[in-house]
Length: 239
Image (tube, rainbow, N blue to C red; front, top):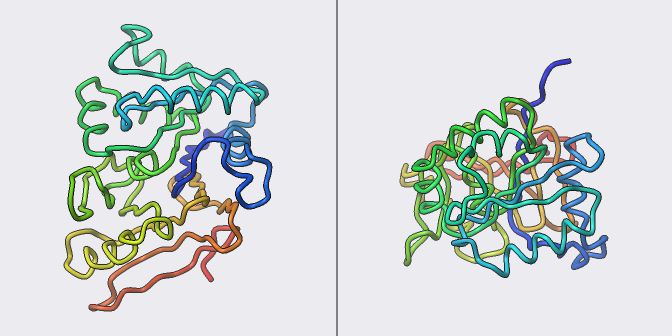
């Protein structure tokens, strides 16, 4: 059986927040875990981008302890083991949290975590996350890592193109992504509204999972000075 490489990029949402739109409050977390295809999967939370914010880690455990899984987290400031490669490769799913994308990726590279995450992804571990945890898998993205205007940030490049999370959730995201595209400062890519997950299988969009009926994901590009947005349907096709 061939290995599926899976990435789940989420535009924005908090743990156990799915009830905002009438769903089970853990609907997004259940969806994420379901893609492992395993009973009681091992899932690791990486909160680097938040500076390992204690409340974020607590919220992760409160959410995932309510599900049929084995949760853990990885702190690069309080390491669980000297063998990070084995720790990562032992997981079934890896969820990356939001925060400062630029600082997160710099720290990951220092610890070679970027390499271990690629190995895990290529071995079939489901990887993904929200906000910074969405941007990081692409070649580049729109970030608020630096105070002031939103800017481009280089990312890991597992997936081609750029990524802009919070497309409908933060008022400056949509116009700034378009501005960067028009100025040639960022390449075409994927914009994701809050409460929307885009699942990639083998580098291709497989499906969209949206908790908000009015939220979507889009392929966005600069066509000779005109921004083109193509809405992605639930089955991954374009509208």
